[in-house]
Amino acid sequence: MGNRGPQPKGMVKIKWSVDFAYAIGLIVSDGCLSSDGRHIIFTSKDNEQIKNFRKALGIECLIGKKAGAAKQEKKYFLVQFSDVLFYEFLMSIGITPNKTKTIGGIKIPKEYFFDFLRGSFDGDGCFYSYYDPRWKSSFMYYTTFMSASREHIDWLRIEIYKRLGVQGHITHSKNATVHQLKYAKADSSKILKSMYNGSKVICLSRKRLKIEKALAQVRKKLPI
Image 1 (cartoon, rainbow, N blue to C red):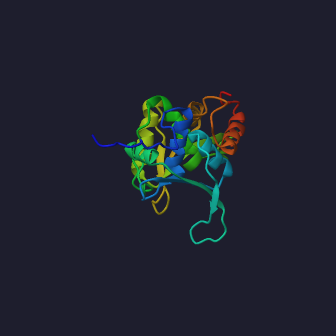
Image 2: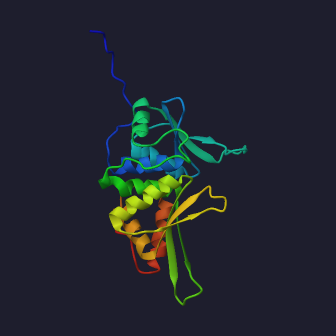
Image 3: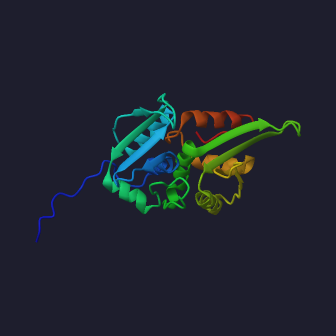
């Protein structure tokens, strides 16, 4: 028999957990796989997001900076690392190079779906609130998920409905390059309580604080 040699070791421990699922959500929204078959790249304007990504995956790698398209000032933080095993794992669950407009459903264990969704929300989601002038004391708020892939947005909508029974609605940018899945008030609260199901979960603090301040207006709080 031939000498098999040492088995390759990955930088990332591939084991589903609350933190691992959150990191997968971040990769789906703001990460990318290099075409070389081994490098994973994650970019964000928010340094906390980068640190959360490293913490969620349990990795230590340098944080760099880069400029945006046609820009010279380096405003974006990024981490890049090589891990063939993790790269292949990401491919196996539905994340591919050049995924922006083609990504569809992701293979996530059902018990970690909302941790994945929290990562997706921190990357490509938003929360906003306002008083509707048409009705007295009408405070409105929405939780929104965005993607350039309609297939991915449709998948998210189906998966959320299966778990919480909320429908949401889909809107599009004027040039139809971004699809938005929106949930209002009671439906939004159900999703938020499922995503932020503990005080110690990794998340982008500025988004969580914004949500908590808004929900305080209607005397609702996240379970912290």
